[in-house]
Length: 197
Length: 197
DNA sequence: ATAAAAAGAATGAACATTCATTTTTTGAAT
DNA sequence: ATTCAAAAAATGAATGTTCATTCTTTTTAT
Image (cartoon, rainbow over all chains, first blue to last red; front, side, top):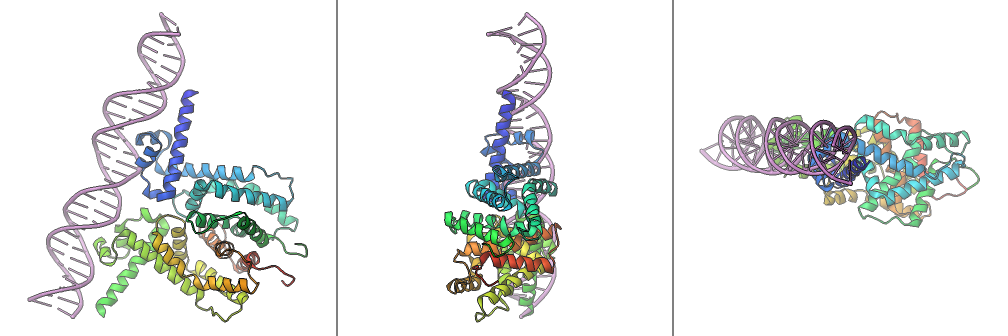
């Protein structure tokens, strides 16, 4: 067990270093040697844990995505109403993106560049299923607009990535008020409009 | 004049090649030699037009951004109503992102990675001023929610980038209906809600 | 004939990956 | 419990390639 423990630590250190360096320099501008340095490991050691650089970044991506969705759905329960469920998931995601900015930035960069293999990308998408199920139910109940999941995502969840990037660049500060406004915008853009608020 | 003409063509070819290669491989995975090849030019020639690789990508970014905003605001007129002006700009932007996908993808990649110098990034932002002015007017008139420009952008304009990426990956096809739905979502998320539709 | 533009080859640094060796761990035998 | 040989893990140095940039020469335009 001691052996396995040690290995797990090194692996985690490598993944952490990858995230930090890729965030600051981009994938192709982060040499294996720097990743090794930051993880206090020899460059050769990386190859005991990962096949090569591509494999390292693919695995990192999938793990971070899993961590992200685990957090997002942790307090969600399928018995909740659609409104409540959406609000809860949305706010958990916002929370993650602001608190765990390093991880969120890494995902944003991977999702907007050609560094990740298509198969790993697909792998990452699977984790979103609970949200898609919620929307499906919302559409059946006439609460969510009958729009493609891509549109729903684009107008409710994805904007948080843009806000996170802006905040990270120091362009502005997302406070409680901003977040509530953002949530209302998200909800207004995907909900069915009727006489009730 | 013939000399200058020739130079302009080469410069354009270099910028075009840069966009295409960076879109497919990312900045750091596109060698100067490939850019030169695609532009039918010797690698050394690039250095007659640009200081170095960083300068090449910075200048490309600013030029593409300018082309993007020129297109977005081409049919806009400050005398229009806020509603009309927003709809028009939004639809021009959508048009650009879908028709001139290469350029739009390039911008998306630059905006989500650390490849562009901060000064060039600032330079690119300036071009958005007409839209910010429109929003400012909309807020005064009580038509647009009194939200930060970052929030307004995140929920109305930026989602188009996500949709473009999804389409580019073949995940789904944005047709006329989708676009109208997207526009309604965008507008609903930033407009002040009242009794009228 | 001269100056600018372009080219291709050359240079030197950076890097991913592998290799040969050393260190650590393991678990069976004492 | 301790020893020790075998296996696993880890390392630092070596390898070979790729690439940005520069240098020298050739081509083109005036």
